[in-house]
Length: 516
Image 1: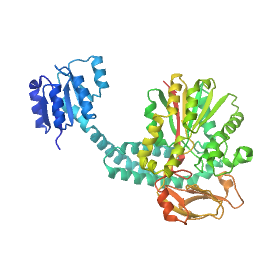
Image 2 (image 1 turned 180 degrees about the vertical axis):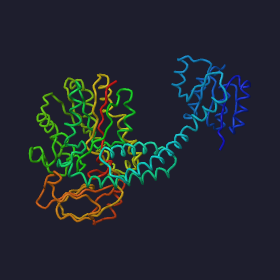
Image 3 (image 1 turned 45 degrees about the vertical axis):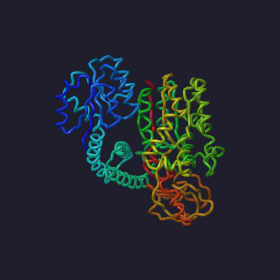
Image 4 (image 1 turned 45 degrees about the horizontal axis):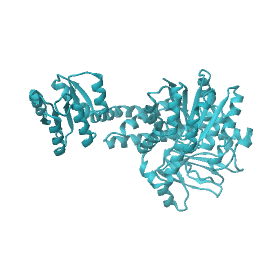
């Protein structure tokens, strides 16, 4: 289909050679001499792009631009002007001009402006597709080899980067290829965790990543020791891809010094991973050392009520005597109170803020049909996260911190995965309800579908009774009981869950932001 162009200039007759040049290139060009004529034409026809003279008698270019946007906001308008005055350019940009050209213009500038404003996305998509095809082979070869954790970090960051590039493409076939490769990566990663995890947490392997219970000591304290003041913001259930869509919103205020991922412990669930972060201990060690701070319940609302106390004990063990503040934000009013009273906390060297919105979003999305429709795939889930952050009290808090030149550590306790494949499990009435891990006795399951820890002590996990064991779902599986099997499969499929083994749940962001 030919590109339809409207060119508006009071000296349009002098531009006849340019018009002929464009028509020879296959473009359809309408011309007129004034803003009023242009508006009449726009009422009658649809154009793909408009070239608009800035200095015309009658309606000026800026005035015409304003009227065009009132009629067809979104159509690319290229302003052509003799003047390079900043005031004119600022006014045009404020009126949503797409591009600028300075007179006299030559045909190649016109062609470039057309390609830039109409074909840019197509060219970018083609470049992304071609580049991913080349990277696909490299990632596939890497997955067939023996990878260490640092190499897994590199692969996962690459996969996230390609997902964000390819999701805006019209080439759905390439996105399907990507999803197949991510599924393969999760399959291989599950085997990697099964082979290495117990050695990591029991100190057998020296080649181990930063884990939940070592995060403060290994990653946070080195920053705290060199910074006068730090805000540690933990957004519950934040995946690395969600961080990457939030990151551009902070670029004017903060420079990203560290953009890394660390590894969540198992289960990748708040009761375990977040308590371990603040305690600096594995769950079984917390229960043994601080039994009054460990609540062995399935109700997460109450299982993390002693985070501040656990953090205080850890800092004491590490010899950190600095004062700290701790705030947990569970609702809008709590966020507003913190934003309004932020100045009261700025004197402390360390402030810890826990935000629970995304975790609540994933749970609520499972229950509410309207949210399932709003976030029915990975891209929409990221978009919803970005929209929340953009309008949240957390965004207001970060703006205030930027003004005070206070640096931020942004991290999380675990991620989540969009589940797709049911895995049958049978357990007694005391078995927990989580879809990605099960803790109980007499569990019956397909061993090939899980990572099982028959002795909780081996996984540094609390033992609820003599015969209890833990099993973890791999890849995008989710546990379903045989009773009412089809109902629960349909109800939970394509929901975002956490607790098991996947790149999305375990390889989670650790970010250090320096105020500009």
